[in-house]
Every structure is written in C-alpha cells, then in structure tokens.
Image (cartoon, rainbow, N blue to C red):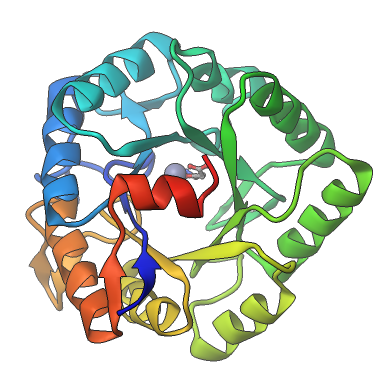
Length: 272
Ligand code: KMH
Ligand code: ZN
C-alpha cells in the first residue's frame, strides 16, 4: 500500500443551495450527522461552512461553535473551518470561526484574489497576512487555498516575508470560472510548483471532482470532495450527501494503491 490518502469532505460550502440539492446539510445537527457519515465513508477532514436557518451563508461564530460541537460529539474528524466564507463578506466577518473555543484544528488560508464567476473573491495580501497572524496566535494550522498558479507563488512570497511557514498543506481548487481549470496538465504544472516537503490536496469543481481526485491520488496527493464543489455522484444523479462522494474517492484511493488515512494518520501528515 502507498502512503495514506487524506480525504477532505466539503459538506456544505457557501454557494450550493437546497434548490440545487435537497441533500445539503444546513443545521448543526445536519452538519454533525453528515460529518459522521463522511467519516464512516473514509473522510478524515471536514471542511466546514455554516448557514443560517434560512440556508443563507454566514461566518457567525456562534453557528460555527454549534456545528463544531455537533461534529465533535459524533466523530473524531479534523475540523477545518472556512475563512473564505462567501464572496462579498468583510474580513472581520470571515475570520469569526478562528475565535471558537477550543479553536478549530485547521482553517483555510486563501492565498490570493480571483474572479469567482461574475463576482470577485478578494484576498489581498494585507488580509492574508492578518489571517495568518491570527492563526499562528491561536495555533490553528492552515491549508493554503490556491485557485491559480500565482497563488502558489504568492505563498512563496509570504513565506519569504515570514508570514507563513513552509512546508505546509496546499489545496489546489481547480475549475472556478476565473481560476485555473481542472485539467491533468494544469495539475501536473501546479504540483511542479510546490515547495519542497509540502503536501497537496485537490478540489476539482463540478464534473471534474472525481477525475481530479483520482489523478491527485495517483500523483501522491490528497483529495477533496463533497457538495460544496459538486452535487452529482454520476451524470445527472444527485449524491445523497457528501458521504457518497467520499465513498467513491475512497474506492479511487484503493485502486491507486493508497490506504485511506484515519484522522490520526491525517494529523501526522498535516503536522497538526
Ligand atoms: N465560498 C468561496 C468564495 C474557503 O472556504 O476558504 C470561498 C471558499 C474558500 O469556500
Ligand atoms: Zn469552502
């Protein structure tokens, strides 16, 4: 068996709606139950967003606290809170989950700005520096979210400044309209840009989710799946939850000769 593969389940996100899929978890109990199903299927990390009861995205600290507590009550996964939130949110709004107690194991650190469909997802250097500072202060590990090649290079610059420490876990988010597209060539190019010793995760959007997960696993990387990025388990068939996508990725890992990482193994790989 090759090295253990970490499966991250992005169970909610900020953009997927109940109109698109009735299987989207929204309340703390729904998020907790879905996290437990994903853990059962092979996920060791939950990438977490939260929603108000009406389904709209928020970064409200109290709602994160409730969701994290609900997850922790049910299973031992690594909780990675979003600091991206939804486009248009202020930096202070986005940073709220970092204030939960105890702090989340991990949080995303979005490495740069990009067109995000018709919107703009803003991550100017001062915001990234400030989020990194807060994460270091709370001993929260970051996953570096890169939506384009320049974002990987921005991480190198931030490391030179001493703002972030490398090696670190990277996540290549591929297929955002405005970011790098989800192709094999592009992934190989991104992997070639990785600083020595860093790990990589791949989040392919839409129909590219499972193919990009498969390629990442073959290249020695990790894989993210779930309703945040893709709602279909096969053409025209809705996944009945992120757990179905996790189960597919677990099969792909085994086919690639990789064992599926437990949360304990994932903690070691991610140096948590
Ligand atoms: N919802 C996207 C605009 C993150 O979680 O850190 C940003 C996002 C990234 O989902
Ligand atoms: Zn997210």
